[in-house]
Image (cartoon, rainbow, N blue to C red):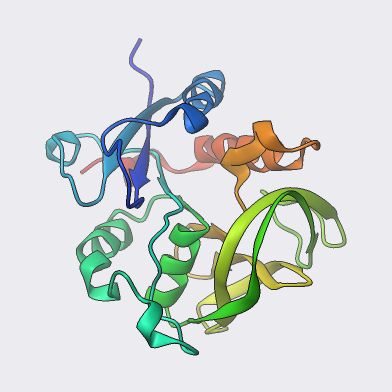
Amino acid sequence: MTLPVVLYVGLWANPPFTSLSERFAHMRSDCAQAGYDLRVWHWDHPGDFLAEDALPVGVILSGSRFDLPCATDPSRAHRPLYDYRPLLARLIEWRIPVLGICYGHQLMALHEGCTLGLLADKRRCNDHPITVVEDDPILGEAGNVLQVPENHRMLVETVDKARWEIVAVSDDGIEALRHRLLPWLGVQFHPEYHPESQHDHARQVFANWLTSLASQPAEVVVR
């Protein structure tokens, strides 16, 4: 039986470009347990996937060691936003669920009216408390405190509230955004790092997102 596809779009700066590194290899089994085939496609190293007839049922935008344009320090940008506009235009056209993680979250937010800022120091830990501030099918009820892995210095600073709803925050700032018009969820933390956490929250966020894909109308996944 052919499984529906979840497409992992690598935005990372370092190889391997067309496969998962050992650190992320568990994502294949996470997806398989949920009934999906995880395929990898690096945004800057096109493969054959986009030539296929069937669209993925969901897309994950990865983290990265690149920086995006930052309102407080524009010189930090390693990649200008326009480099990614063809990819983002494709995702808007597809109108399928997208999970943006860390850099992927920042990329979606920047493209859709937000600005980025910098923490005074890099946030790197396996368990950092974030608070859900709006009921959300993926993150849970408002008031929930989740312990999740973090690895970033840049973050979303201002939000276009006509397009985005803030779903979770921490003492650092915005931790999760949900798009009001597109099926996009952006998280500043790393649910895919869940084997490194002492808590089950990150794994559950990723599992919830995979489960949510089954509720999408079939017509949105056919080219």
